[in-house]
Structures are given as C-alpha cells and as structure tokens.
Image (tube, rainbow, N blue to C red; front, side, top):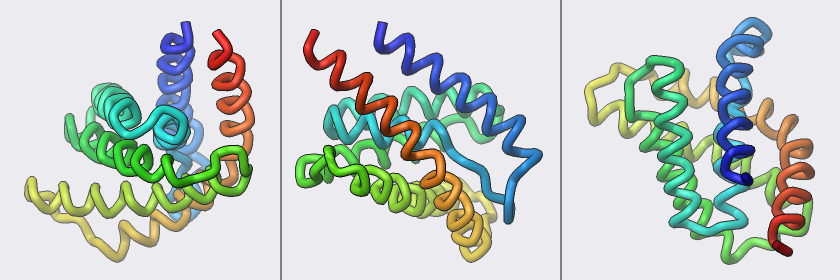
Length: 161
C-alpha cells in the first residue's frame, strides 16, 4: 500500500511540475516533486532503496515527459544513492536538516545531469543550468516542509506496522 501511495504521489508530482508549474515558473525554475520524494525516501531508507526508487521514479518521469529516456533515471538514482549514504550521518528528526538536504540535492542532481548530458553529447550550458538550479532549489525548499511533514508522519505510522 505504501508503494502505491508513493507511485501515485510521484505521478501527480510529474503531472503538476510539467503542466501547472511550467506556466508559473519563475526564472525558468520549477519544483521537482519527484526529487523531493526521492530525497526523503533515501533519508529514511538508505542508499540502496533510495537509489532504486530514484531510478524507478526518474524513469517514470522520463517516460511521461518524453525527454532523453534514462537521463533522469540516472540522475535521480545517483542522487538518491548519495543522499542515502549521507542519511546515516544526518539527524532526520530536525526539521531543518531534510529541507537543507533537498536544497543541496537539487544542485547535486544538476551537476550529475550536466555531466551525464556531456557524456551523451548534449550541448548544455553549465552556467545557465546552474542558474536555473538556484530557482529550482528555492521552489523545492518552499514545498519541502509540507512534503516532509506528510512523509515523516507516513513513515512514522508505517514503521510501527
């Protein structure tokens, strides 16, 4: 049941970020709800499960948006794996730490995207991508507290089962 809720949340997040937030983007940035879900999942479940969920949700995003199939899967998978490794050293009950982690993971994902894009021959402007990442990161930290409160409550209630 919890995986069905996660998949539904990712689906709704992808639809929202590619419809509603394309229209109301600020400085070409928009929130990445899938990244937020992957980061919070990796914080609570570790590197392997965070990486796997990142690959699955990234591939789902690639298939739904039709851009460079596999690129988001690699980027979100690596980001989930790295955040999962860091999660062992982070105090997840502090509200500020997960929000800051989402902020920093936005930049990590952008760097991975830039490197992977260069490997496959995409002509990406690094400076422009980093500037868009700033507005993406701001959007992500605006939405992170709501997601974290729901995710933390969901995780705590399911941990007892």
